Image (cartoon, rainbow, N blue to C red; front, side):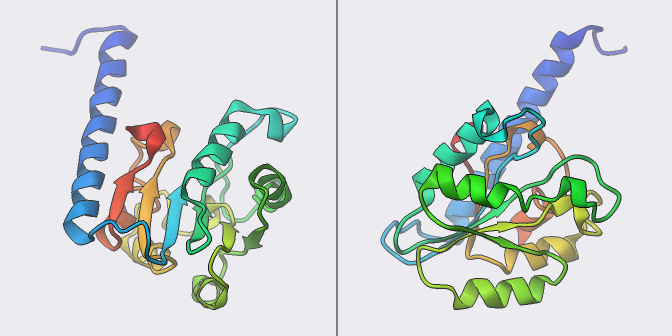
Length: 196
């Protein structure tokens, strides 16, 4: 028997999918680590910066990103922002996240350094050498081969940039992308506030 027609059925299905992903992320996180707010950590957070409105800083999605960053930015923590823009086929200058770094810096009140993702090993070295309290913005994840294919090798490489992962990109939480799904197999993971 075919599923009911209309948006209600599919809306409920998407909601259940997000709930399952949220529960799984929470389980993985608490299974792998004892959450300690006093220890130094490098937090990877998946946010949604796929913003088309102008000015960008006035968009609700941008405000939400700033609020989530304020919740996890601490003097002892390093934070690495993971996000995407558009649907590029490889690197496209027009879809770079680089222009977001100064906007995030102003909104957060803390320097946000932009990191190219062409060489994730180099990015990991820069993050590791940075002082506590540093905040980084990684280039558009969809520039990376394997992101939309949920490549576990990319998931492992992204996970290596930090010590834990927070998924707080509500709009794409249903997708099986490397930065949303595969990464959780290699890092203690939990849902962010927008997914709870």
